[in-house]
Image: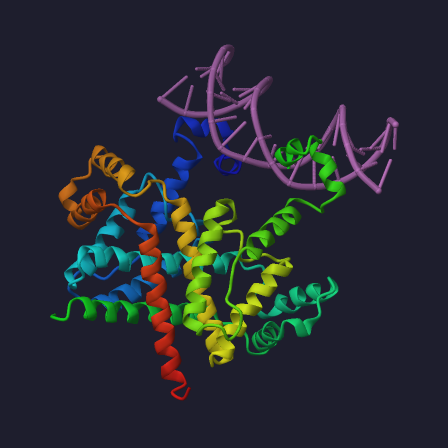
Length: 192
Length: 192
DNA sequence: ACCTGAACACCGTTCAAGT
DNA sequence: ACCTGAACACCGTTCAAGT
């Protein structure tokens, strides 16, 4: 609040003449982020590529506005863009032949993964390889024998050497889920 | 800090004689939660049921300690139980035949999903059906024509009627991912 | 109608002074 | 060695007083 006010060359209390409270401002900001998410118009591409491109679009938006990570879901005053986005995704799945329950399932897995990945990526203390070694070393200093954790050491040294690419990691899980949904769809609704 | 101190019948500043700072306390608490996570001992069950049971154990622990949701990952001073858990999971996957990269991929998807689901479940403003209607109504009050969002209305009324079960929702996504990992494993390492 | 100074009830943390 | 009062630098928010 005080920082926002400062940027407007105004005192913090003045803001309360224009917005209800901080939550109110965040509601508006979050809806702007929602408005930046692109989802293919109905009937232009199959559901799988539509959902894949949307997922990547969400991730891109969250990367442009890292402060929004963890604030997008659970809004209790969803804005226009938010509701519109929900409708678009639900519509895409339903028109592709997903049953209502199946669509809700699919939506849940996809968004849990997309936002969960963003949270993990944001909260990670180390830029993967660089600081991983330091964490391991602190373990050692605390008296931990490293041969107690062979698999951890193995993974840490591998990642330190070859690096860790968030983009490919994200898409691995994304495709795993999309393929799973495709199989689930074929399994529950053999005709289509 | 001040609340913790109060529970110990002490002033807040006294705590700094025993811990470095707030983060230090949280580190310790989080590691207790990690210690409650059960993972099958090597060789007792196949990797898939081991990972499935662990996922459910994580979720149960997070349900017992909802404050820990979102604090488990990205610790930069991982405790003993944390490191031990990491090792156990990595070991389970490696000994089941996952390559190192594949194990890291698998670990990433699983934990992103598990913790992402917990975050979503915690942050949800409405206990599913009950408050869903209220949110929809506020949309209407804001001048939104409901036939703009047929799929949303459809889903909301359905969920309001039949209810929404977090446990089955969680396990749907979990099994989708585990099945996907099994297929991925078979695909990349045809022999085993 | 809009802005603001003073104040309230919070945070985590430091440090010199006490025992 | 451990505790504490006073203080600092923060939060979001209210309200009466100003223009």
